[in-house]
Image (cartoon, rainbow, N blue to C red; front, side):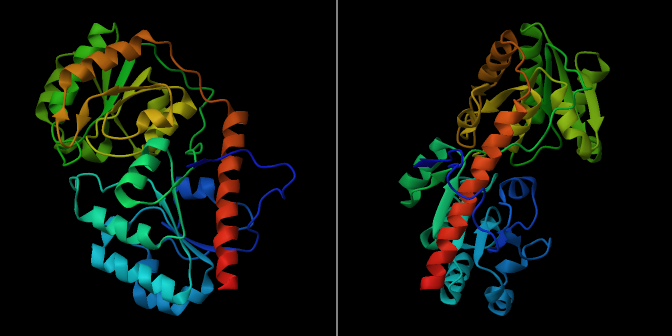
Length: 345
């Protein structure tokens, strides 16, 4: 397993100049953060990605040097993903895969998407992932060695925006396969916030408010918690105002919200289903996954424990910028390697 290191000062500032990369998705905060300078991004911001279409691939495979798949393998079944991977191989287009999620949230494990992921990992020239724990899972389940690259910064703290000690935030919406019992999570989070000497703020995106569990609204009306609606564009600011942010999902491998909280200085209480604690040391876990469901007592205790710890400072920008440059250098090296192998094949 390889970890991203700061660039060697003896190397060019960034490799990969002129290499044509088709990222899937075309644009995304993570994709934008890791794409090296000098690389040409090929394609259009269309969803689902046209690069999954075999006719598009046949017509435009010569326009790219590398296809880099980040998300979307769950859109196609295993047979379709295998056919797509084989089409890339026939055209000599190297495939790089970053495993952000080991299976599609809500699909169960193992699920059909596990076979789809296996199909692309079997033909990928290089596999990357974000944490050592995920790399170990990939090695055990799929027999591939993954390069571990840190998740780079995706947010910047607002120096004019304060945070409140003791304020716990939990984002919920309508019941779903990912968060099937939002009311139970709110009750447990409320208990943890109060026992820890704090208070609970339930965050609901404006569009989701009509479908919210009536019990949560009743608790807010009774003054037991604060109910805040927000537009999606203000999500980073909502997280920055908290002492503790609770992640409610029962499935997942990595979380962008963990990285946003690191950037803005908010402690995280995260489910045990993924490798969130590998992402950042300020994560407090609680027991919650698809197999066993949520242990509400452990959630209450985790929130109480998180509130006893001091509020983290926002991430040091010099360090985060250096980390991002190191991650971009790893990507540049990978692209240069696989594109170079293609030119000699």
